[in-house]
Image 1: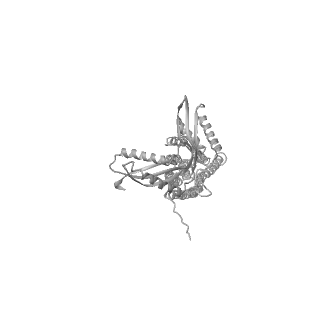
Image 2: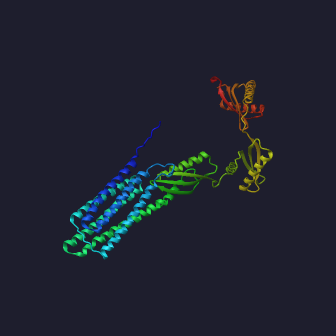
Image 3: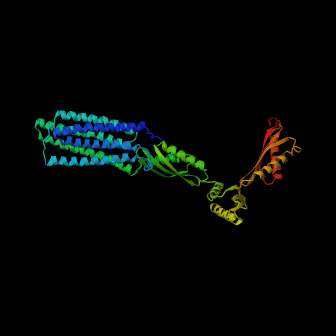
Length: 473
């Protein structure tokens, strides 16, 4: 019976979660401090800061939850992972910020134009606000460090909130200080600094929210970072085996990018060469950004492609095996000759039709007056009978061992193997000779013996003789 294995979170995930959890704890403390001060002083500036911190607390909780979800691996329902949760979290935070700003603006104008509520500023309130500002500063730096180390939109948004809280809290401190001075020295006009400070907080919130909103909308709409596509194109174009980058598409989910690339490779490249090019492309893009790369390959003709490569590409596209290509000038015209292999069960009419089609396409890529001669031969798919091959093997061995009377350098032949490959009979064997013979003599003798075997057995396509010194046999 199997058991469920729970894998512990990675160091990066653990660090992000702890940073988000610390953000929640800090936000709770700030909300309590500022809510107490707002109740104690009646200050709109402090109330706006308390509301701002309340939304920061909600945003921090959303951030913590989104970080937990965003780092989950892809599954059957979320093929690109869960990274978009962070972008959505940041988008929600933006909406909350803007709603807060609208309320603060409305309340500030109410106090400036219509109502004159009593406020009770004090030095202790100013000191507590300074403490809150220090908490904001420490948390903003901690969150920013983790967001840069482990790229996270949600943590970056949270860090931005706490960093702007520093400035908004400073604005409130100036407003409440002005109200305190007005109360102390009998200057009622200074009390207006409190709602003005609140408007300053609202302005900061709108500015931060607009920047954050733009980034999150870009992420949700798959807007590629400026310059990233050009960097990827340059890296792919410089990859060995790639003719050109034809298309690049980039989308982001959390801290990971998904890149779709279409490249062109020489149409004469083998499947293995094309695969090697795609792997090199993936490595080069991975050096630029953490990414999941999909590469689509398009075969293309190279500039100045050789005529033989062009003909092979045409034949390969039609699924026609060709070999023995040759070309030369004949009577002022180009004469191209090649061997075409056709299914051995095809009729002459079918084989000639395939050859004619190939010839017509070759004419389209060469000069119209080019002469093309195609030799048609059967494409061997049948494996030769084992008994028949063994009989031929014995006959070849007997024939070779009858030749030492003519060639005194030859002592004996053995290990004769005969096989049928693609409708061609191939022979290989070992021949023992005197070890003191010069290599040139041995080479000439093996060539002569190979010709003799092919002359004696015309059905044999190729003979390969391995010479060896008699002393070692």
